[in-house]
Length: 234
Image (cartoon, rainbow, N blue to C red; front, side, top):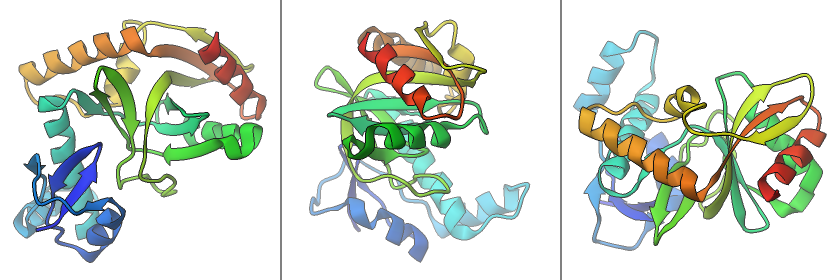
């Protein structure tokens, strides 16, 4: 059974659908050892489709099931969590942008590419994982990169996390987890137990002692990238 390196963890996954096998291919590693198994069976996929309120193809169901298993395992024992965001690397540092659906995460990261050019590398446009590795927080790409499928197999030390909101002008200021807790919780996979909830909140407390949390009101113009970047440097 193949082993894939995702978020710096060797994970055993036995893909059921060819689409999932193709998606996972760039993360295939040569290790025979693994930390945990995130495979989903054909029966689990069928059960997910049967419960879905909207039509769902088998490979999409498998995507959800496998990513959910990985996310729960990472939160449970590997100092990290899934974090719905668009993220990029600039000059060796990672920047993450989370927002309510439809706010414009991808538009904003596209502005960074316009403003900073080739200095920017897209890590993942939708579904990265955050992990604390050797006392430092990293954003890690996953094979699941959203509808645009923008990103690559890489990790980067996190410089700043932004809570993105629409505004009439571009402004950015430091904020606190308590002020942004609703959007932070909506950006991750909701814990399935009290123990997991405590673990997630403890992780957030520690994360934002090490990483800047910035509230960003922005317009669609490229200057929003400059304002966001300067807030992280300040």
